[in-house]
Amino acid sequence: MGTTQRRRPELAAFLRSRRARVTPADVGMPPGLRRRTPGLRREEVAQLSGVGVTWYTWLEQGRPINASAQVLDAVARTLRLEQPEREHLYHLAEVPYSPDPECAAKAVGPEIQGIIDALDPHPAVVYNARYDILATNPAYRDLFFVPQVAALGVPNVLWTLFIVPDPVCPLVYRETELPVMVATLRSAYGRHVGEPAWEAFIHRLSAASPLFAELWESGNVAPPGPRVKTFRHEAVGELRMTSVSLSINGMPECRIVAYTPDDEESRQRTARLREMREPLWPVEAIEPMAPVEPMAPVEPMAPVEPMGSIEPTDR
Image 1 (cartoon, rainbow, N blue to C red):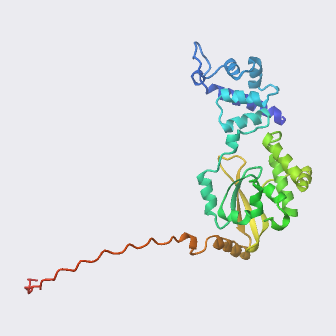
Image 2 (cartoon, rainbow, N blue to C red; image 1 turned 90 degrees about the vertical axis):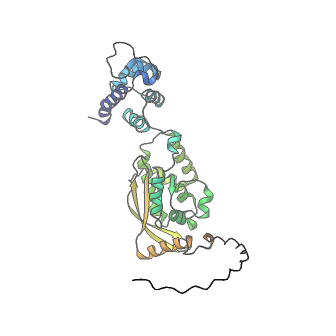
Image 3 (cartoon, rainbow, N blue to C red; image 1 turned 180 degrees about the vertical axis):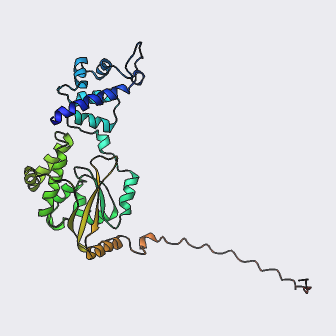
């Protein structure tokens, strides 16, 4: 059985289960009499979604019909689908899924930020599947945020590595590393073909970098995985770092990438970078003392009366 033939029954079962949990009261409809279904009827879903009853019936029966993103959005709103359910519906219907802009721009939560901050002095970053930079720790910024990178104003590591001139690029051996990164990008692109944000990014970077355009046209794919990469920093020299990708629950297609020193020399240079950022006694952290108020004059003490003799006490 082909992939499409397997997805159709799954799509039918998914729609029926979602329809069963939405009551007429949920969508502002009277319950009516002699209602045998636990949720909405098919004709009610069709009416609320603005589609034909026959078309929706065929969709829920798993028949081979075409569905547009606009129609699926309408059905998803009627069935009150959450974001993961909406994405699941798109995949089952074989329609490219484009997340809501507000959802795509959602910031990394304090829990994830706390994890990558705790990895300092080891660099760590949160990427999405397009290599957009969602969060960083101080060590990552030490290594990557050179002035030429900051001037680009594009929070995307691929854009940085392809556009920044080689002498100031933090990544050494770009001719080896960039093909792997582009292949990883294309592997994720298969789930986003036709999505405006992805298509615009590929088009812009291809126009800005002939090398990226050439690598993209090669069609190679590769999954994310551990690699040993060499970085350069003008203050401490080269650092050999092992990169490891960790998935994040609740953030589909996002991952933490952590870098650990691959040898003792790199470990020492990584520690030196942190010392340069956070000296043992940072002068800036020491606030000047407030001026001391003059003390009030001290009154002379009264003369002390001589003490009497002390009688012995019973022990």
